[in-house]
Image (cartoon, rainbow, N blue to C red):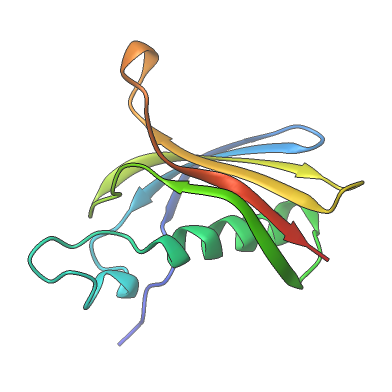
Length: 119
């Protein structure tokens, strides 16, 4: 039995220091288990883990987690959600800005955002 820990990557767009990933948050992701059985939602620690993981994959950012700043969890991410993860890497400061959003145009919802110090 395969344990699923990451979402399905649907599409990606990248420039020098910004990465945008469109993700499907599959219902089978292990992190949903036990996180509110009656109302499963994606844990905040998982959202942070994914942001760091993709930064390391695409920007070759440092592997060492130092701290977090201005982390906000505003709206739950539920099973089978389609979300956009935007990552901006500031190599000079060793800081990763992230945000998870969904929707389009005037109905964009922010699920979470913040800054992570790596290095």
